[in-house]
Image (cartoon, one colour):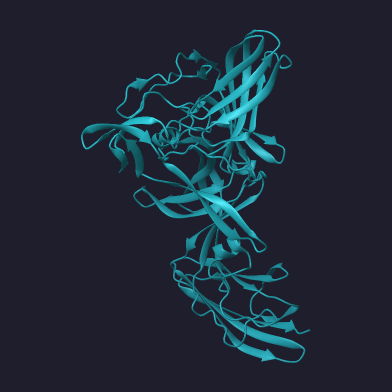
Length: 514
């Protein structure tokens, strides 16, 4: 077998057997710094640069140190030194890795030695570790078969004394079976017009590498501004390490089809590690447009170790103006359900054909007033860069100056100059109560009268936005306070509630019947 082109030597001790040099002498590969573009959909595009020596004519080249979760259909190899002089004749992805089960599967019918009850025994292995079970199922028109994989720890070994049915202890084999590799390995057959050293590029897509954005905000004492820090967390579970890599991140909803072919992946136990972060660190990414998405490039190279979560500063801005709002919306379980889930859930009561509830409807049980803060992602507000989707955790200092957590919300990908609205929780000292005081149904219309009581137990006045959702062809017949028509189905009554006081809103709505 030709030597594998690896960044480091591989040696393996197979249980208690002799240490085996698996592939003989290794040819060192000078690997340039890789480039890794990570998408926030759990995949990445990897570009790996290496120098290798080719002879004129046919060459067989092996590359290991690639991701275990690679998509082999995405692999592309080319010579940057002589693109027209090197032709890829064949490409293979070898993922049968060195393991006890894979070795024993290949030793069926061959002599093995094993230690059992302190004694060494010898015999011919008669059955594999891995078995494939056929499963039949009816697809609605005919029966089809698929296969599931099972494994066993019970073995039959033909010895001099007879067939021994046993569990194997430590197994000793004299040589490694063909076709096994220490790591997932790519193999090419290359045709080269001339010999010499070639600078080559290997690119592929792999699963198991993703990123997310987490934001930390601190609200000012007067609740009129906040400081915002954004961190990018890159999680590498590909099975490969990318050393001194140029890191790029793509924010946006990129369409990627699910693979239609199945191939076995080499998987291991994945344990995340984390890095401490300095909240005072300056942003380290530059940003540019990429098609209909946004690309963030880390200014300095970094190493992405396998099974590691790395955090890097993305954005930092101070004194961003904010507006705090109080919303009473009893037609919803919470304002956050309205923002997140649209109009599909959260209503109380049973609705009739005309979109309004029947006589049994009541919102007296829901008295929460939701607290929101809003801000604009603009340069004038010390922001103005496209913000990737992520969770924003909000803090505020108490009287001793110690930061306390006061709520969190998630944002979607937010372009510059767009508004951000965060629902942080419910106001403790504000109470709302709504009831329907009159219901009238005629042949041509339905008429309803509502009373909303808003109570403020704070030491200062506040403005509460009392919201109602009206459906059908409706008309406001009478109202005690001015309202704003937000859209064809939503009205808002912005009402100032005095300190330690109460305000009552009454209004009558007429809904036309078809």
